[in-house]
Image (cartoon, rainbow over all chains, first blue to last red; front, side):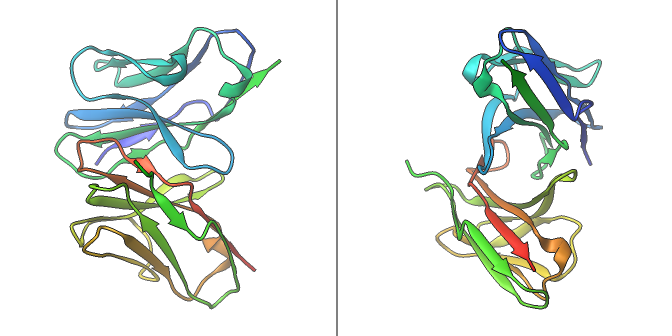
Length: 113
Length: 112
């Protein structure tokens, strides 16, 4: 089975500052990796995904993530955050031979004006 | 293309009752998964259905059950409700396992 650890439960950051949300995973097989964002009272929306190929993945809203196989990490970054980025962010993993998604416990990003 | 639709959005029940939640996936998606989301626990996987068959099951008691119909719509049933069942229940659909899941806005279930 796979597992996901999001190291920071809450991340406050000032507007226009850069941010990194950390995600580490555990798996004995190759995986697909995803980042989702959840706004209040809504479901999860896909930000970006890594299936194969380039380890630097660009997503929506200016976010990007880098897959690091040796460190089993998939950290999410944005060079300059906006107030509208305030939300809950979830990292997820799925084995490339499996069907089930495993989610981290989420990181609450708060952008301070 | 319509997204994943979950009904109802909000539900209030009392202990001991049962409840049925509905999920209509994106057209063409055959995989439907259900999750329970509570503060501090994140998303807990309940089960996944693919072409009317339960393909995966999480670690929840038998009070939680589901099914999928031939049009890929899915229902989740919880019997003998407990206070701890209060949560946001999310449904997600995808073409198949190697594609990202698309989520509905969830059904918020409150148990009094």
